[in-house]
Image (cartoon, rainbow, N blue to C red):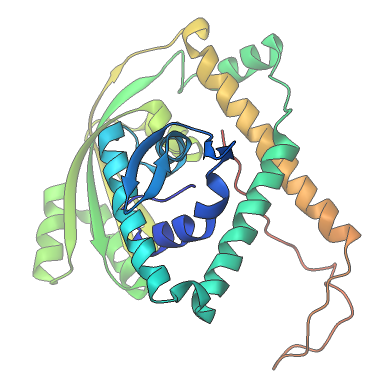
Length: 294
């Protein structure tokens, strides 16, 4: 059983409901795994708790808290079955969707599971190519202003940011315009910043700001200060290995999805504004973003 965290109640209930039956094992009429709790005679076995801690619990969650969450879920599952919700068409559709996602993820994990580790030369090359991450690595103290505004006002905000003397000037303008915003302070090492924008941060001087558009408006970041804290190649090696291995897994997963699509006959039924086709259009670019575990 792979339940989700308590904050995602519907997904957690579906996962418990769908996978409960196949996660328990018996040997000679006895539980295959130690029983850690009983809920109205229904056993919760140690393998379920281990799976919860490995896949469904937030980082740092204690074993006791995870067990209590499993008990809560089991109580709800029992009541749901009493009300025959396991036969509700909407629930069955959710089961099918969850099963499809789990099987697809398992397949990609199997395909990418034998990824070879990077060589010493590749690790050294990555280290040399990214001094902002390693040899010139910095710890950044940032002030982040999350701004909620319509997209048509982004250009106006951009002009205001360029004229303002600093973050306080921008906040004063936002307050006058009644534009919602939230200010947060953060201290982040270089590796916690997006790799594609890290070179820009490395060139910034204290007090400088950078504005980027977001789905809900904009994010304005001011560099309050930074300090040099380099990593030598030996210390950086585990980080580089994880990054390069995961990069290869993503590339393998994308290639495998493309291979499967090319080998398959994919048909699109007629829909308003789109003619019926016998197979998937090959000229259109496809954005494939499979999920790969590190």
